[in-house]
Length: 121
Image (spheres, rainbow, N blue to C red):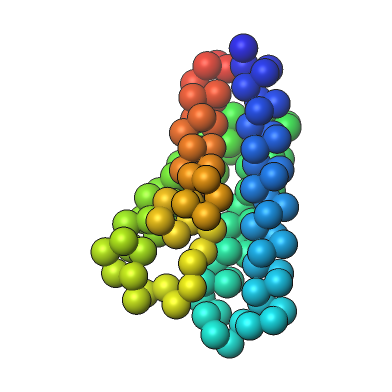
């Protein structure tokens, strides 16, 4: 079960990392001055996803737990901020509205990932 779950996580994080990297690179290169905070934040989220891939692939459960807890806190925080203070972000980030632009995958992956860490003990 945990091997299959780790493969699902690797696929999910890889797709999300590539999507977030592509999006942030395009935004930073073409319209950075419009919303530098949001675009930089998306690039940081993309780097974070690559760290999650590394942690899962290497079975570094402690590091994976740290990465996924930070990610979950980030998604929940940014999600709530974009709902309650929408003017804070001039443009959406990967984690805006709990990751709605990515089918809520940014919210679901850390939850599934933490379950994987728990189950693979």
